Image (cartoon, rainbow, N blue to C red):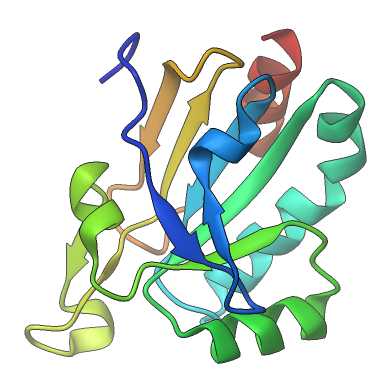
Length: 153
């Protein structure tokens, strides 16, 4: 996947509007897959990306959060934590599959398919430059390393 074109997608945001990866061509995009809104570690992760958003925006980079949650749950999540980047809903799990970011059995719910905690950095040309996968959903990424990489592209 590194060095290859990032799989294209179009998903609904918190306002139920279609947002595509192609909309961000010319910007570096940090795609942060997260298992679920309001689940502790996800709250910390999205807040950490929000805390780094000004730095990222200053270098023509941005963040997109993707989960299998509904637009309504994501909207409340964004409102609660004042998140200023898109949270997208992968309801049919197609993007989770395309990015090999699937996690089965979150919270002991047998058969429940969510996103794992996966961070992908896509450069301005749409190529994957970095992929980090949590060994389990409780592990957070190295935010400083991701921000430094995104700023350098």
